[in-house]
Length: 458
Image (cartoon, rainbow, N blue to C red):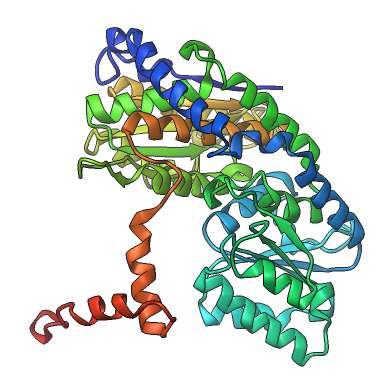
């Protein structure tokens, strides 16, 4: 069981990272490795140690076992990492179109719905079709102060109480062990609460109960998921760059950006099961690395999600001939759970005959390799992550590799990969307009902004 990274096409003679540059990268990586190891050893950053947190796994297993068979729908109220990780796990590790399958096809496990926005149309539609007495709501917020999630909570709490449904049996909180608004609220309402460790940020939380609780509830083997993550964490602890896949990935992307001005990082799985991992990666990479350095310099690459082979017919034209400011990470799968052979028919039709006897898996794999080769031919650097198969162990490996790569990249860019100060001003303005106590200064700043100029409105 392994996830492998082939970066041959990143070291192109024309358009790629120079061989001498790569040969000298080990010293720079060693500094990034030591800095991240220090954060980890001090306890400041804990995501890489989640696979060894037995108490968290025990919480998840005990709760999911206790409610087995009680619900038709599990509904996550959460945003950002609280939503993207669970969505990616559902898409990858449950049968395709999980929420459309009947109970028998789902093996008796519930559907997983995710409310990751506050659009009233979406929330009204979902609440209108749910059987509240057969639904479990997971409210995920580390701080308990996320306005969107707390607004959703208030609406759902009112719906449940109005319908006479016991919130203690139909809600569970996932939050900080001791801080924030949700922990005392859990005690007040006598609602079960699972822990997000204090040293785990939202976009690094998918291997905590943020992701493992909903995964376990819908029948994903979270023990194997965490075992895979632990194996990758061990591989990515090596101080030797050539033996550390996360280090290689981070260093390649950083060099491509800072030396070659490749500031857009495309993440392109060639598997529908992995399509939502592209969105998960976008948040992980963007929110961690798009920062102001202490010097005031803005840094950070722009991640872009794509899907093969679908986006060969939309975005690849841009990747091939547009501005040469991109790297592309392909994600392939060696062995698929299902295969379909293309029938040998209409052999006399040139556009059809050659396809007969091949399989769809063969076709999508060849398309990925062909696209990688075509990009390389044009001097467009790219690399390929390959999973032996899509299963909990390999997904755990993929998650951990990309998270550790992000941590290393933060050190290379000279930024804190674990905060997000850029979103705070917008939050404060929103709090001010909604009348949240303590936002008075933000209200003054908001009121001082220039009003819209009618001459600039068309």
